[in-house]
Image (cartoon, rainbow, N blue to C red; front, top):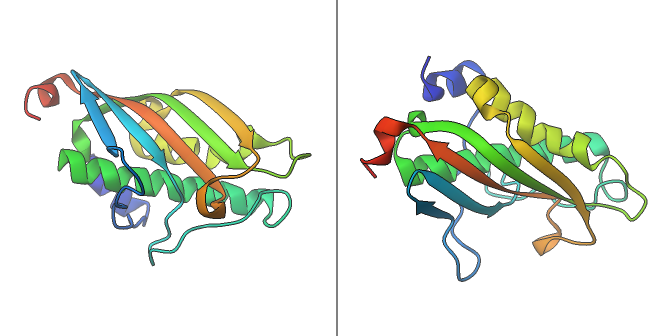
Length: 159
């Protein structure tokens, strides 16, 4: 099943790929690897999931924000690649949670992102991962995730 068909089967909707909020590239390709800049949790209406997890929003809302980051990142990858089927696997993920000082469940929040990637890409969506708490994130967003993705062999030469 194609990645696009899997996204439809799961009744998911990708938001618009966000424009860079600074002086950087959303995706940098080095040979067969894509380095994806940190993405925030964009909702389909263009607004962001905001609030400090464990203080302003619940852990469950943080999980939903991390899932939204996954959809946002896929929108950027689709814009860059033209076809999400060019992705072989997620290699490394860094998840950052805007968390209250005493919040201790950062990995559970970032599972919202990781679970989504496994639902869509199967075991190739399961990456090496770090999940950390931050004192703040830009614009008070709840979660930010960056990733490294490997392209399929046949896709490497065509970009």
